[in-house]
Length: 251
Ligand code: PGA
Image (tube, rainbow, N blue to C red):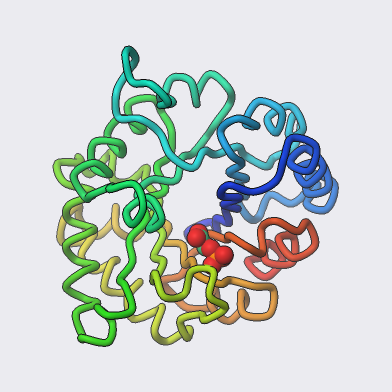
């Protein structure tokens, strides 16, 4: 059985006070529930304050990006050891907004994934097709290339430690969700590819989150699909009640 994993991607939203407030509300709303793994991914500048707010709770801390480099002259970057130092468990890598607006490629996501694993951080590796690609019937091909490229050269042991997030780009922040059947079709494809790359038992252990306009009213049906093991939540993660309701739907 794969434990469901819900991560909140706050993106570039909230300020210090509202970040701490949201984290504190969630620690009380979700207290005592260990059946679902939960992580909050605030902007890097507030990781420390959110870490403090989460102390003593089972909610984990995550980052939205990291450098593949260890340290040195990389102005504006944040390293894996810094994320570890501040208490992060996981890091979102290759989010479609980073691929679209910041030039991330499968190769850079691959380098970051390996770096994250070397620090004991769980990479949440994001993949997803654009609307034109879905309409052109190339979704399967696009996802195949992204998964192979992003995970290139990982050992089965390392692959067993990652999480994948399937986020169709046309569903992110648009209010348009993939139907449970559309999402499940891609999740099953990813699982099959993971088995080919890393073996059946590793593939069966990897959590594959769905992301793209996940809301309290569609979460249960999406996560009820056999290969959907949780969610990467954007907009609905910015309100304690809606995020807690999505976690409840994963139980
Ligand atoms: P959304 O974002 O839930 O606002 O669609 C999801 C994501 O980008 O991870």
